[in-house]
Length: 306
Image (tube, rainbow, N blue to C red; front, side):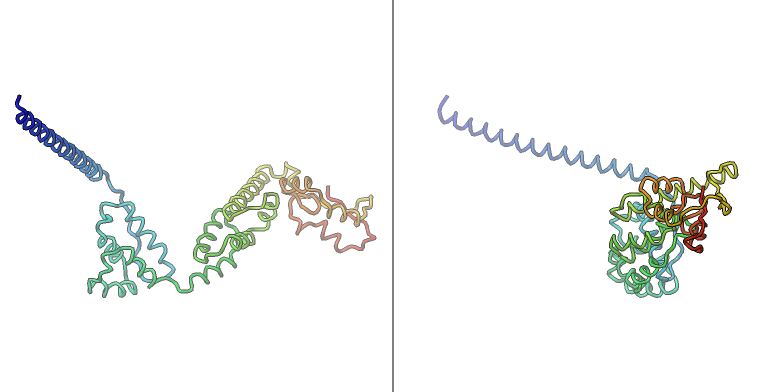
């Protein structure tokens, strides 16, 4: 074959190979687009076939600072549970959800924003920030701190008490050390006494867990007392034998109690016994032995607790 013909044929072959390569790339691109389209269609079908849960709208917000947190949390919950009704792409729908649930002072604040078609209607987070700034209690932190200092467990369980405590704590923004100290002080005396048998907590969360465990132990012990009643002598306070013929050296007894060893102390705590004299049925602060001895001269006879 003539060299010129060979060169022409080689050139044509190279051009054909380049065209094949381009067509291959275009084919791969089309296949990828088809796959993306199918995937999007499948996701759309899945979303359309998913039934959104029915949610109950919150009561209309009147502008009261004490109701602000609960109202905002309920709005966010509705948006989270109904993403098709309030999608990320439709910011106005989210804002209007809030607007439809306002009344009184809050409604008066909303009206000019809506009438002026304020640009903030197109950004839910910015709208919510302005909304919270307008109706938040300016003394929220100081009021929360006062509430924390005055809180007492009372008749509440530790779990219920801790929930109320942590709600105020998030507003007061105290550090861990201050929060732990305030929570410990707020607990009932019997729970605090039993906490002495636990390791020192390193966080408020650990302290709450320990306090809850102590409360549950005390509650279980109380149920046992109620269940066994008078048949369980170990759960009953024993009378003080004031006619005991054997005198007791009060100084010696007090000395031994002051030097109560850790094993005995733990035993008394676990058995809900008086830490002063080892009796059952009362705490050390109410111990009749301790009261009777404090009223006697040191030379008098003591009375034991059996």
